[in-house]
Length: 435
Image (cartoon, rainbow, N blue to C red; front, side):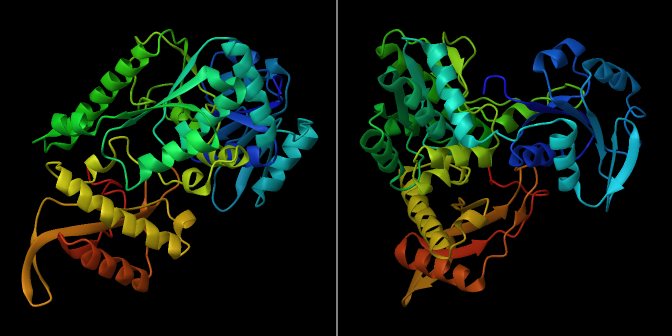
């Protein structure tokens, strides 16, 4: 698959570029998004089977971007111009402007009849290709992976292990802000199931002392991120000569780094924000994949559902779901409440239908009653949202019966909590996380 067939999507202001690329991939053809101003020499290196211009207005191929059109003719491959007028898709193939209500049929015709693609890009083929590429890249050298237990780093680690075996060592740093029983589950999967060399670092006291008294959310994140780097560097130094570093970079990280004009939207710092001066060569086996494709690879590699379907979880963990100062007591409270939320969401069969669902612990206390006694305890905030890309999000209308069960369990099973509330704010104006 080294010379796999590729369809390039040039971002000319179209609003649904990721959907377009994912649809092409679902049809069995590999596709990438590139900015519309990409130089001609870089286009040629990609050697595409065809090119799609993703436009905002229905002006047709060659009319909106005549310079691009001229360059693309030099490639001598089929070119499709797609715009997103509602309710139809307006497109032009080699200059003939047409309209259709069936965008998927249009793509199939373009891919298989105009571009003569074979439709053989699958996750099995991807795994085989990456394993071979990693073996060739690494040779007999040693490889290091910072393992968070999240989907991306876990799938990347197992994929690299399939390629190089015991040449891979994973470093799993427990900063103390993980969810209930998560450190134990991660170690069990990687040590007992995959027999991967795993260095477990219990750094809970070290991290907790660093954030003691800190209430500003940005300061928390910076302290935790910096300390993670220091711990990781300390452990890496103990392992001797390491030549390669595995990062769980995925395709949305790459896409979000540039706009259609090639300017940066936001930078992504993978594997704990490791600094650029670390002396490693990078292995990024998931760099071409969207999140759902990463999950598919994880399933094919045999990772358990609870790890593959794991919801997005912030790097600083529960530290940014505790509003205000972080203490060991607050962490214990939030772990118990969060575990109840996750357990009941799974029982209700909603785990795969919700982007994120979790508990938040504010710094305030409220008056309540348990039995005949007055209490002065913490509230727990429930948050559940759906999103495609985390840029926007809608709050989930959880069933009242489920909310009732979660609320009753939390106030009955977590002694320091006497109230549960539900956040019904979408993004914007709110954000998904509270800090």
